[in-house]
Amino acid sequence: MWDNLLISLLIDLSVFLLCISLLWRYGKLSAYHPATIYLVFHFLIFTVRLFAINSGAALFLSNSSYFLGTENHEISRAAFWADMGFLAMTLAWLVEAQKNKDDFIQTEQSILIDEQVLNIILFVTIPLGIWGIFSQQYIPMLGKSEHDFGDWERSSYLSNTQNFVVLSMMALIFKNGFKKTYLAIVLIFLLILALQGYHRYRVIVPLIFLGSLYLYRNQQKWMPKRYWLIGIFCFLLFLPLKYIGKLVQEGATMEDFSDFFTEYQEVSGDGSNADLAFLDMYAVSMTLVDEAGSYYYGKTFFPILVSPIPRNFWTEKPSLMQWTLDISVPERDISKLGAVCSIYGEAYANFGYFGIVLIPFLFARFTARCYFKVLRSPPDSAFVFLYFLLISVLVQVYRDGLVSVFTFIVIYNIPCFLIWIFSVLKGKVFQSI
Image 1 (tube, rainbow, N blue to C red):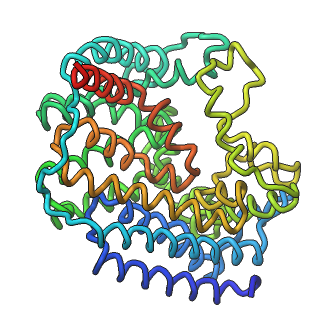
Image 2 (cartoon, one colour):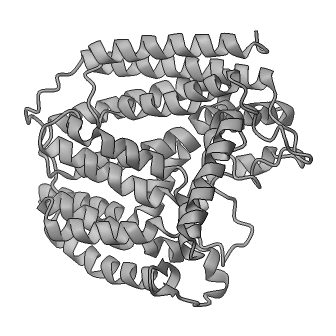
């Protein structure tokens, strides 16, 4: 069974169609329901990839003369267990849907985002963000600053300042609405971030946050059809975005861009594009865990405890993805290759096959409970703010594992996280008086 990729594709298609039909009919879906984001993720990462492989696409690293490529039986096993995890999440989402009504009737009492807290934090983060952009990033027509920050170049404390303006605008939009000034600032700084040639999440996360929030505030479940083409275009542009940024910085001509898109289409078709091989990476991680001979039983999350310590002060500080470094071998150095192992790979590393079913089930049930609570909460509450921060990073969570909840909400999104936590703390203090 594990060698037959056609059977794997048929199983995956059956599971996908079953889950989407059940969720569409009984799951009370919307664009900002956590299941919707996963459905898109699963289709693109697993279903489309299996179809491409069955159509002749090469497996990840199969053409490498140094690294050991992915094998058919690894792909089949990984796809099957991803489908089992998908079924577990679908069950969780359906259970929660039957317990709740999505009628936008406010029944929850909730702490609101505090305006004073927001203003104090943004008074710091907006100037820091402007400094972060002009001191570290490439800016069209101005070039890139050549500041030397020494050992701090590797620190996320420094690099994250580049995101602060956009993240601060997200908080202002949540509190004060979709004002044209805020949106113009977001557009300008997102364009700058898009041209850096790396970290595409810096563009996609704010777009998901703002798009989902807009639909929620207008009590619309789905994006109007007239915007679907724009959404598809943005998605198609998102995949090669880091390469486009590098070409812009190098002063590429239209002919250079034409050659690039032709080459990008070719490598996407033959399977050598790593952006489309996340299933392969997850499959390899399962094999490496087996070869390591033991599971982590939750220890993959321990690096979170020491992550606030700057690496400059502790050069040997464990990485947030330390487990991938631990299981890597020279012929399959997934840590060095920057492989992403998905929520299923992380779950398997911790608890084996049982983890692939249990952890996604619990996470899906948690996110569904949050979703239905949001529908009952005041639209400007701190809980709603935190939920849309979570929704905006769910793609990263499904792609990289649960550690990304911490990475992208607390570390990457620190301006918004601070606004949320201090608003909650201040609200609880006044409630207790």
